[in-house]
Length: 255
View 1 (cartoon, rainbow, N blue to C red):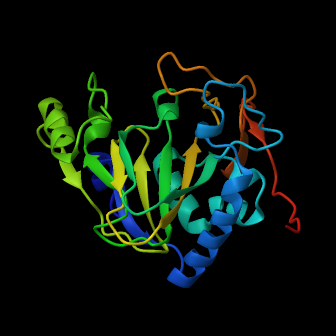
View 2 (cartoon, rainbow, N blue to C red; view 1 turned 90 degrees about the vertical axis):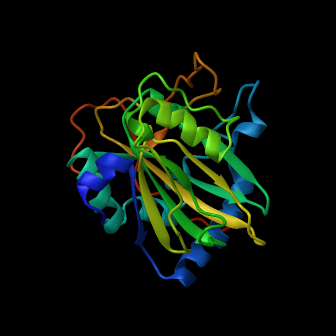
């Protein structure tokens, strides 16, 4: 694990090995099987989602035992508690598929404008160093008054960030299947799959139990939030606040 000073300076750490590549690819196959069963924003933006029929795409930990166990993996809990403290919940676990050529523009997850948190990006399948991992503007989590613009390319995003902090850097960690990156909620991040294969990744998002977490129904300010909070899993310590909906390990079900 990178030192705490490094994480505080850059806003991210890694890569860290979590599991063998073969195990990661098996989990990637499970993730692909789950994708048609969850409700991603493209299916409900502008409408009213029915998360009882098709669960919110970031709630795999509440419906799939393997992803519940992944959120509670001791190696992940160790690095997350090192940042957030002894009491931690997992509020979001999702799978992301990017075909060759797909881009995810520079952004900050909208939830982390509302509460403090950290995220884990775990490469499962097709994670090729320098081609399909995650990029960061290192140090961007310290910026104030500089909103990340998804229209910017890499050079433009770096120049914009350096206008606020000349120590910001464009960072592209050499991630492989079975390895993960830990990053602070406010750090700017993006991806562009320039490889020949489809990349599958898991994204796990954590917060302190004192933070009231919610489901965004759109991605423009002011954000509209779902009235009922998402299912959360206590992964470390205790919850003395009771502001979030905690769930246990889901039961295995055929199919």
